[in-house]
Image (cartoon, rainbow, N blue to C red):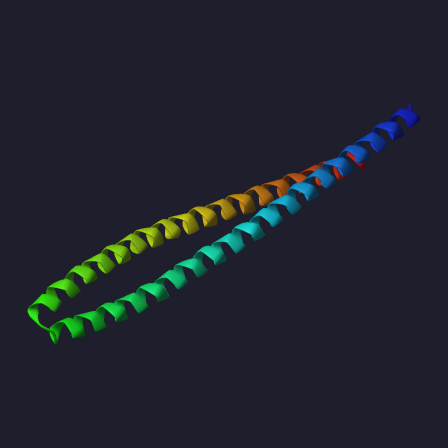
Length: 138
């Protein structure tokens, strides 16, 4: 009877060890995914900042075009206005892209939080399993 109890305890310890290893593996995977998401967020934010800088440069170019158009004849003013409208359309398209990027950043942050929550739940289950094992072996 004592040998059976020892065998059961040994099997329970092996099961707990396997469960702990599984949790550690899931935890490591979650941490890697979280790091990847954080890097993706940094890249997305960096891309958004680069686009903003390009837009600011374009706005400066447009202001210069406006100054030139004001000092030229009516015909050249009309031509410059058409060019400016084209640039404004480009800027509007980039603003839409920036809005999409902001949405992607928010989704990536939510996913990161979901991974973090899952990790916390897995750790809590592991602690509960260890406590249960400790209670049953004492």
